[in-house]
Length: 284
Image (cartoon, rainbow, N blue to C red; front, side):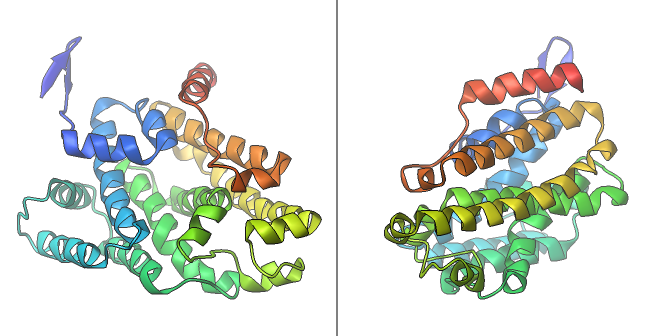
């Protein structure tokens, strides 16, 4: 523990700090606006999520490392101290905040599917992946913040909405990994053979219409998520709303220029994130 200004501040492990800082600019800088103890817990949660995701997104995929990770998690969940600070910290958090163990199982199952599953035929086919990869993280955040059960559906929708913007933003990156997360039947419905840059260049109107359709889906989920903000205490609402606002900014940027997804990853600057957090502080 360290003491600053009379406040006891929990120490965040340097490994966990670095994993989170490198993994997500939006989440990292938004999280800095949580109170120190909550911030430490959020770092523990997202470092666990990030490490598992990084194994299956590596080129080439680090399959053995992923399964070793899941094995260490199983050992830690059974009460063994593994010496892996990411896993041990997450398991301690999950026990203290009473996470449903099925949430972690669902998360790891979705990560495992990225090893073998490369496409989805329908949105219903994608729903299981979305639940494990993003909705359960929203549920974990709700438990971490001690929110009432009435908030859980909104928390799931927020996780799902943010994940969907990631899918849209990362179309080119996912294609390079051999994956397409959008329903194949919807791609075909807009007259597209695939979501490659070449296809988008040949059919710019069809591609733009396809992305607008996907962005409408994101906004529906986002609007449903925001109905749950009333359950979040003010001191926690600021970072959550800030992250949500940054995902909305990303969606708007892409809608304005759909081809931008092939030119680079759309991300808000640190200045934009911090200024939005400051604005949210004033209106919270």
